[in-house]
Amino acid sequence: MNDLLFPLSAAAVLGLQYFLSSRHNIYFGAIIPILVIGGLTWMLFTDRVKSPLAYILILVVLLLFLLEQWSRGRKALRTNTQEELDKMEKHDIS
Image (cartoon, rainbow, N blue to C red; front, top):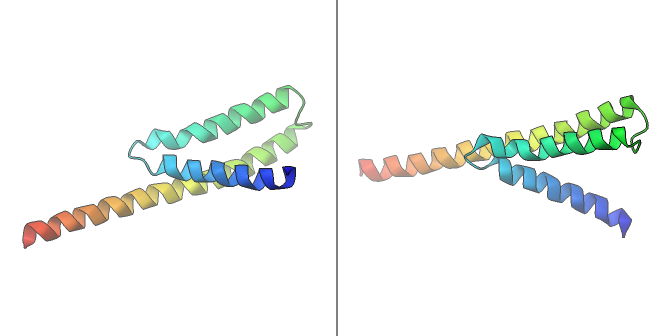
């Protein structure tokens, strides 16, 4: 059960990051990275992450994944907004 829990939770977090990033408010996309930084920092201070190097490596990898999802979400929002504008222009011209 634990072997299946990590990939499912990672997919859920990345999906939530994409969803929040595709909202009109750009700051929603910062919620999960701030939680990740806080959680990993807490883990470092409570000795759940043994070395600062491991902390930095884990943090960089996680933030890269979250940044990619943020970028995809913002791109999807721009695309959807442009499609809506194109539809509006099409109906005005006719």
